[in-house]
Length: 297
Image 1 (cartoon, rainbow, N blue to C red):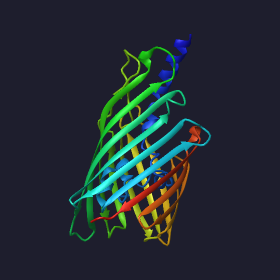
Image 2: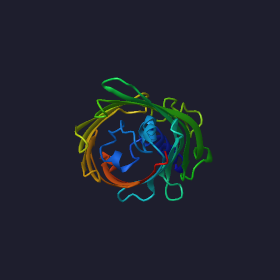
Image 3: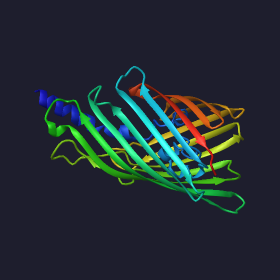
């Protein structure tokens, strides 16, 4: 009976696990507007939401992020990014993320990603078209399932590869931006249970836009992500960001009718962001991140 119960728990958990893999918990400023600002291209978090975003990094940039649901120990996200401008020719970055139930604390699925990104920006001498940025991220995925105390074949690690591709276009003196990104276009299929067909991780196509209503004080965002496989849901996000003296930022948005909010503080060479997001039945998550910038070119 114990083995059967554990087997059923694994089936339910793995079959619904794709919700863990949506890139929505990285960066308090992104959480604060529901993840709608996939057009933003000025910090290392962009390699998670849209790899083309690295193209605006001028020197060296790093970021550290932490997120967890209120009152749920053991479930968390940790993200570390490092990006740099290579002689002003192209930009590259490395990202490490880990999300899920820590095997040392609880029972469940733990998901980690190592991503390496490359991006390039192209300028155009056209009246309304300012710049086009493109980017590519190759990802090494690792899925860990442990703690069920049943047959060892149900536990262990799975390793695979995937890829994100993105592009963004800046228009009308950078007042309007549009973007497109494909998440996990090589959707890794995994299975912890022998003899099954396996489960694919989240794969989706996102499109987004941002517009300054009052530059540089108020900006609005919107994005829609279309799920590309049976385990990937579609989602709509909208949000707005209001800046006070280009130092303090407040953000509010919706993701699939769930409210998100955030607050940011920016100074010379650094930025700190805090955000909270409601995920329906999963409750409230909080997010805090720290970014640093060193312009060397």
